Amino acid sequence: MDVQVDRRTFLAAVGVGAIEAMSPEDRAEELEHYMMHELDESVTPKLDGEESALIDLEQQAARPPRGTGNLFMPREDAFEPMPRNPTLEDFFRLRFAPATHVLQSAQHALETGQPESTIIACLLHDVVLNLIKVDHGWWGAQLVEPYVDEKVTWGIRYHAALRFYPDDSVGYEYPELYNRIFGEDYVPEPYIREQYDFARQHPWYMEARMITVNDTYGFQEGVRPELDQFIDIIGRNFKQPKEGLGYDNSPVAHMWRTIASPNKPL
Ligand SMILES: [Fe+2]
Ligand SMILES: [Fe+2]
Image 1 (cartoon, rainbow, N blue to C red):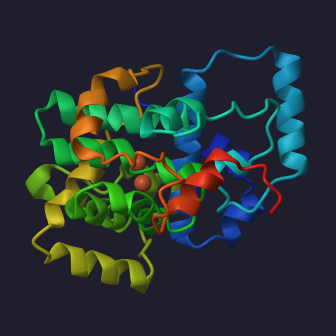
Image 2: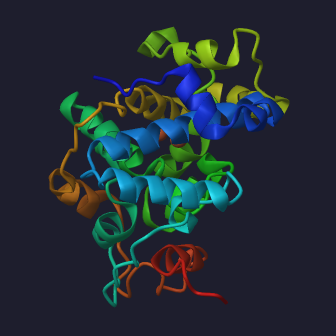
């Protein structure tokens, strides 16, 4: 069953005042992150009531800006140490877990026989939300750019804009949930429309489009696919630097180091 979003619960969680102050795109982002959070909760062992109420209270008291990555949210437990030369698998297990949404999206691509470039794109398309949420298509593309095929990077960059536009040819509908939550008169900001128009006529359009299609299969409550089934695909499609992610002196090494060590003050 898909994660169910009740309008009132969503509004209460984010705050009605906060919702009203947001642009429709920000609301759509907030909704997606809320759904991913609920999804991860559905596969995570529950804390007892008192403990979780305490964490809720603390989180409400010190809520960082909404564009902040998950790793920078208030948390109870310390980060597990990373190995010396960390691989993508290490990041999945030690920093991105449970990563339910991207695993489910990639599993749908795998089970429906889609190309490996789409499967790896689905697996990576939202992992940057652990670092930052603002403009996550662009940040997410940049994070993996040195390690994957150019088309994979391109697809990740534009998937975020394409979410707002239907494509009957592949059965991608405008999410009905957006109508219910944001109203039917919502129009994306011009820069998003421009990204869509650019991507729509580009030869690589389907690289981004198929991410949005598989994305809609990535909200199945209580389903937690194993990373192990993707290890060979990662091996063939993600060029792991031998020094480890974060230590290869690439233009994005700092992003991986930040994910590895969110507590470093400077
Ligand atoms: Fe996304
Ligand atoms: Fe997604």
